[in-house]
Amino acid sequence: MTDQLDLNVTDDEFDDEVDELDTAEDQADALDLSADERKLVTQPYDLGVKSISTDIDGGRISLEIEYQRKYVWDFGKASRLIESLLLNVPIPVCYFAEDEEGVYEVIDGLQRLTTIKKFLDGEFALSGISVLSELDGKFFSELAPRDRRRLENRTIRCIVITEDSHPDIKFDVFERLNTGAASLTAQELRNSVYRGDFNSALKQLAQKPYFTRLMGGLGNKRMDHEELILRYFALADGLLVYKPPLRQTLNTFMRYHRREVPSDDQVALFESTCMTVAEVLGDLPFKVAGSKNPVNKAMFDAVMIPFAFSDQGELLEHAEAVASMVEELTDDDRFRTAIGRATADRSRMLYRVGLVAQNLRELGVGVDLPEGLGLEPTSR
Image (cartoon, rainbow, N blue to C red; front, side):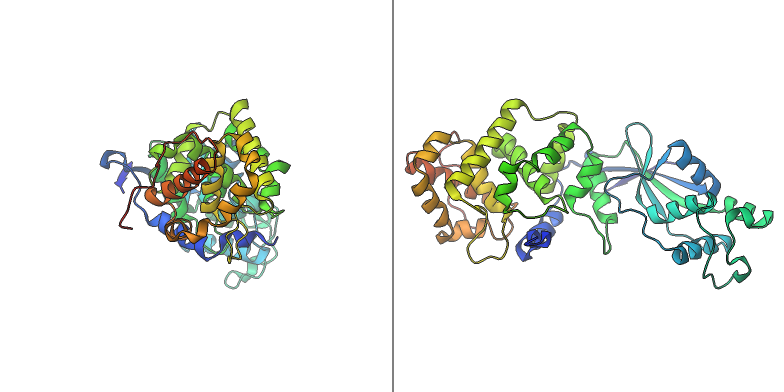
């Protein structure tokens, strides 16, 4: 039965207090979906242990998911799972996501399913089990036929999030299931959920020296660099129609462009913008004075988007004045708020970009963005 529900400087320095608050606030923002679009379609299955192993071999269940951490259980923990199955102890539910080819990608339960597969394949012997101690040291093939059948016939409840579910709802479910000490960032999830040519292009651009220079040589273990580049392309393409939550904007842009690569002109503009930012603002151009965070993501928006829409030659011609202007931005109380809290808010997004664009015009730099963008008085 189908259920339809409504619903180093270190890498860690990217995730300072401001970014953690913004992430929590962005996740708390309601998704921009109509009632009809709030669709999560799930299919429950009780899969036998033998069937799970067979489906992994046949490719119906995929354990090779980029965003999943690798197999980390030791033999003792793995053995206790097998013992629990033999004792008919209930096992936590596993969650799969159905892709467009009908393959079930494991989004929760990778360690359990991998353990089952490894034991049935004879890759480890039981060890450290406390109840069925007579089985200690035995491989699957060494179990009595009755115990082998008992194990193979045990079932695990598995919930499949079908391809019919709305993509934004599916991603939201992935985030909810993505908990624990090794929880993933939103971009690490996108890296798997939206695999394709665009994702590959983000990875390539994140390694370009003209971009990494702007990061001050910071590492990139959590895909922060790829997310910044995605942020640039999404805002450069749709700033005027932007609306929060930001994560939905980034998800939607990446989903729609997953099988495309940025055009040569788009890449050339990104490259020239990065190089101009470095030439005009020097090292760590997105660092806010007084913050330990070397890259403020909202400051990245405020600089990269106006610079991308500006006359690059005029930016270089007025480099000294432009650098002074950017340095003094945080003297503006409203700008400081726009890069410091609830930064995904539409009015704050447009204000920080619009203020820089206006200031550039006043310095004699042409900017191809609407005049007065985001600068209307606000009660915020």
